[in-house]
Length: 193
Image: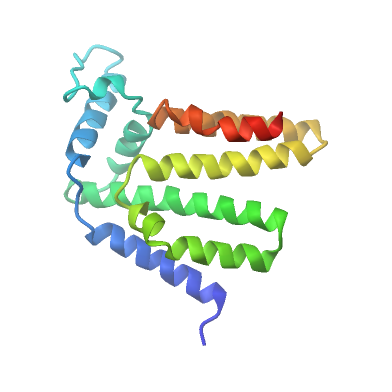
């Protein structure tokens, strides 16, 4: 029988495989092209005349631009696949954040069960590779939830400073995908108050 330490990596590798073969969604071409133009604009220090595809210049494109920068290190023939793998890895990291949060609240066994159930949820697993928006927002929310709880339970100023920096980066990542992300933080803010 396979152990948990063997099973999780197998399913993560399966998810990466699925990210490679899943194909491209109907709007990914627009987002990838817009991210390339934004990246070219940034590297030209404003000299390149940036014109966006449709109305995408009004979207915050932080994640698209960063993913385009990272994917540019890989062969161009596999550009879409590496975008999917990057989305998958960010989404899986969000599940690990949720697992850590559940472990704090309940127990290690409960967090393991929770992680497996979330990983096998078709709604989440199906979006891990192909969705460059919602998966990133969900992962940012999961990490923020974990770090807010950690911040509230920590007494050390050094730890609080480090956690505050991480929270700022995660809020920036989420808002850099969609401004509406800030509205999803309202329940966390209400719990803190």
